[in-house]
Image (cartoon, rainbow, N blue to C red; front, side, top):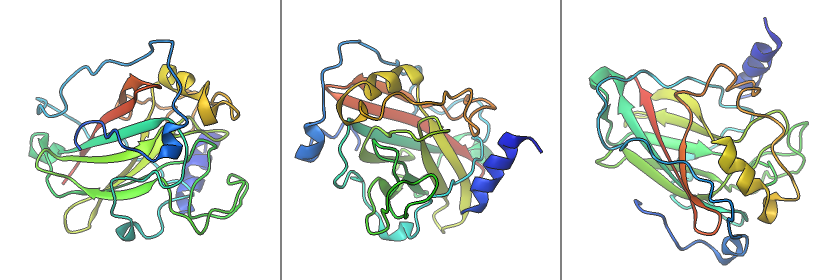
Length: 244
């Protein structure tokens, strides 16, 4: 077994709208003007049904999945975390129904803060601080008539050995698990974000998407579209395809 496969499997075993302008004042304090003009253009309308589609890659839920996701039904997952505002918009589609949207699918997301820390877990080799009593940057939503769920968050940070990412678990309306996957970020956007605000002291990510042990096989089905700027905040748009 290759080393990266071992790591990936080992981790697995451990186991609205428009931009929402009103975030907590602590988050707004971290917004710094973006002078680079860096952005990624949306190439297609996620509300338009494609002519064909394939299931999004299944990935490890990682060592820090949400412990009780049903208790975290919320679309604002910022809590007390500081960082560049990010609106997350995820669409869910069914490859077994001609790529049609899925209404009432249950979607959980979780990601680390600007320092690379996850809530709900104590200090470990990967987690440098005890966060067992807090639940930031985790949330559950149910897809609307457009097959979309959305959250107000901050741009995720990074931790050693992993490229920036968001974890996603999709269920049908009855609670049956359909897919666990991850969302990747455009590296040019991440570089801009990590050069400023609370991210600057942590520096640039030490792992690219190509060298990441989860994304190294390609991010074609996992790469998000990110638009905006540091000053205005960013919007992430991504479509996940499941068999339902």
